[in-house]
Picture 1 (tube, rainbow, N blue to C red):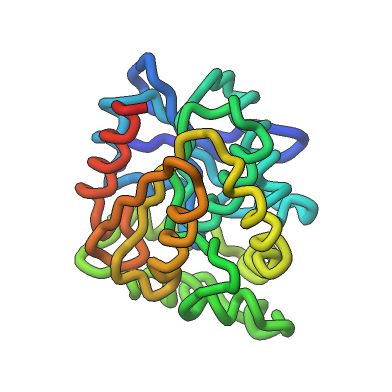
Picture 2: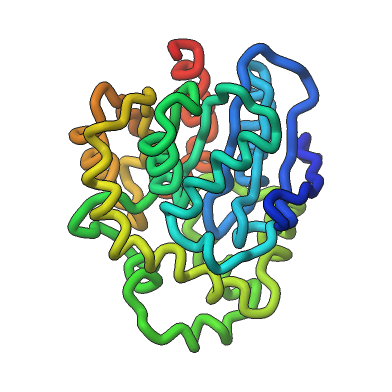
Length: 271
């Protein structure tokens, strides 16, 4: 049974789902859920991360089980909301962990708010300009007609992603939570977020050189969805950043949970 227990809080008028670890720690960490999963993506690493920091995990607005609002469906707008989340939970100077869709949003946040976070850990998210994306993300970013996505059912959506997980069996309750996040046309409604990469990643690219928050990038060496080139792009442009590579595919927080937890906690201890 998962150690993650979820609740909801209203932030800026939106119902946002979150979970927190039970033990108090001097260090705090804000964990943002990847897409198309939910905050239960941290199930495989939760107990180890909770030994080093008090955890607050969140489904970002419009993703997981949190309420959607169209004006937040871009990395830059979401970056501002991440700061609002930290404020709402009273996190004075947390480490922020934003894999996948959180990558660009977190980097916008630390670029615009250099003293807000103790450090940032990102990766497995689109970052490079020109875009360097594998399937199915490339199609999601570039397809102009979203009609086919509106016809997909919950299992269709999750099967595309979950069948790509190698060497890790999702617990039944975790998979059920992922599936429950996709009712109606929820998946199609989320796609504008990644389609915003086309106009906003070039803007972010101009800001990377001015980031002063310590940044760690964690990526799968064999990630077919977000190739390692995206992580290398960030490493070359963010001063003092660190790149840690997991010898797995895209879902490194599950496929390579031991390495992912180790890289994060070692980073927290140094920063």
